[in-house]
Image (cartoon, rainbow, N blue to C red):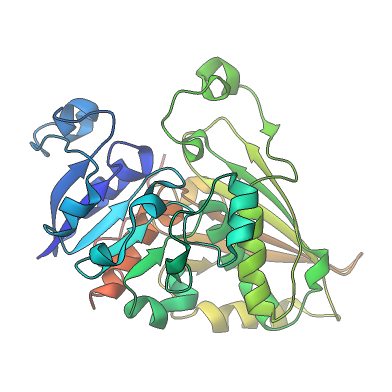
Length: 346
């Protein structure tokens, strides 16, 4: 059995980790870490865990935890994991960080966009960007995983094949993204209250959203040239789910069959990426509660542009599910173990 510790287990992503890992036959959760609910029964924080989880919440002592488990998940705000990370911890345990602390290799970019000083930059080079479908072999050998952001996961997987094949102009990419309210976390914020969100849609972080440089860095690596995008996220009145619509100008004329063959070639063996049939559009309701990403495209021949669409659950493939997928790879387990979650409907 793999012994697991979760720091930040009482946030949305942390609770989703618990839900998934409780169904994983090779895992035992040894530590339910929390800053706000120390010594409170986990099932009192989340009543869905009543008579399922009897343990109480512990503190966030990462150093002590490293001596007790095989892998630590940190579902914490930016800066927390980096502030505690040291070689002594990584020599004992594998770490999968769900925050942005190790996602970007350029420390100046991180500090500029997140507005905090990075506490352990020496680990940036070692950390592996945990997008399993692209970095699988590096993930298998890693000690430290930077679990990708939710918007970047959906955006990159949707665009990746056409970037790699050089089919679209990299300076023409526009990403219009929409997310449910859980993407903002469980903390109390006026803008996320029911009366503020219900019957409303709004753009936010326009031109300044922190996932922008993460997407740009990864697409630049794939394109082998600098990629700058327009990225605009929107908040929609639903609990969970992400839908992205990306636009890119074609470098040359292409038929539906040519583009479909590219997507099928890249994702034919990827269980969690579903390339839809012609005429089907990705919808958040068909991936909710699952680790799937649904992808499709339309060629707008009038202006020689690709319209690329992707949908996924921000708490599963966008956070906890992807983290478990990374864990499976790191420990040599079948990648789908514990993650064959059939999407919920309605």
